Image (tube, rainbow, N blue to C red; front, side):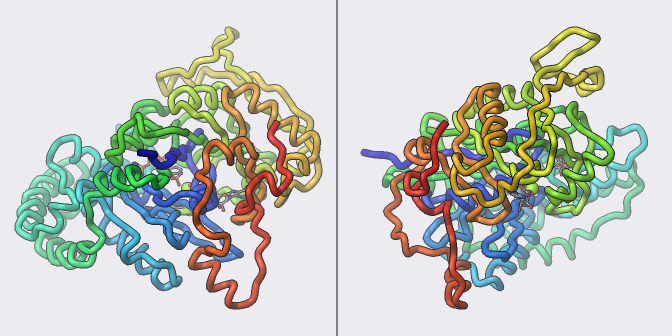
Length: 475
Ligand code: GDP
Ligand code: IMO
Ligand code: MG
């Protein structure tokens, strides 16, 4: 039996590469989109004709009519955050009923997770990670400690009550002893979460079965990564990482789809680089250039509003991300941000104590000794915004992209030159290899598109046309 196409979308840097936008564009050609890791620490921005959505838990496929969305077992789910997002989507006219599913095996974030995290982040002597304060780390700790509460357990009111009572007793004592925190009240917590459980129940499913059935029926599945390679608990810049497996391997464990069912791994990288929160960032820049990148790229956290640290593409890091994830296609985003630069530096290697290195240090302190070796590529000083095809890009921008491609071990399949859905080009080889020839009719519109169309607006959606029709040329 023919199985449907599969692809993992994974961040190659420290997050915020534009995964949300790319998932939205590609969701036209996929039947199901599944999140596999992280929680509402993610902030995935999608802009469709000026209307902005920031999705934290719900996969970006939800915005595409006819696409099913799954929150996999690898995700940690804050029930209140989930319901808030569902409410926001309903109010925006986006369908969530009958097409959005939550894994019964996903772990639940409860208020004591946030309490422990806030205490730990501010405790003297602890390394401050600069987390998003969403309780992500402590929820994964409880999962691995085999004392977590899963979505299936949330729906069992007796189990919910006893878990909350026991956990509050233990966590209140720990948080008071270690961080002098005020205790949380288990009774009011139970009331609030039992009410939330009722509203979540209709979304709950055995999503591993759902996804495997979809594949067996020949449907295509896209796995939406959150966070990124360098924030992965195993492969990132530990301890300045998040607490989940955000790399492509996590797509299998985080959804229950076997690794040999995954065909393509699409790494998303900005045309430069950013990081939010603490930790190493060898190619970081300061001062005027950083301010320019931040202003042009609007580099402020989608969730916390924190200003993002900015720097240049780091090739040793990109090669590492290619290796760890098995990236076979790159998507380069935010090329337009570099349009005004005279030259674009790229970190092509590392030096430690004068000696050249190409590997990534395992120790966070090892990064402190890293000195980047830069190669400066000429800027193109022309607008690339919304360019329709690779050949339409200024020659020097093409050379920049080809340089990244040559040095990073995978081909470029898409280039993004603006935040809107239609400011995206797909290269023909990528479209042919990765995308299912869509059965969905050309007239299919996302629910949001539909409402704008009714208002009489017209769309220039280059991303939706087959690449061959756009004259987009592969390298
Ligand atoms: P994610 O977490 O990887 O989904 O990325 P975020 O949504 O947190 O951050 C990416 C930001 O860049 C968002 O504000 C997007 O709207 C914006 N964006 C995405 N692609 C492009 C692009 O090609 N050009 C520009 N200028 N902005 C982009
Ligand atoms: P998306 O999916 C950027 C960072 C935090 C912090 C570290 C640990 O939008 O790319 P956590 O709250 O997860 O325990 O924080 O990870 N971080 C992100 N940075 N984008 C994200 O998600 C992030 N999710 C977590 O800033 O440094
Ligand atoms: Mg983000």
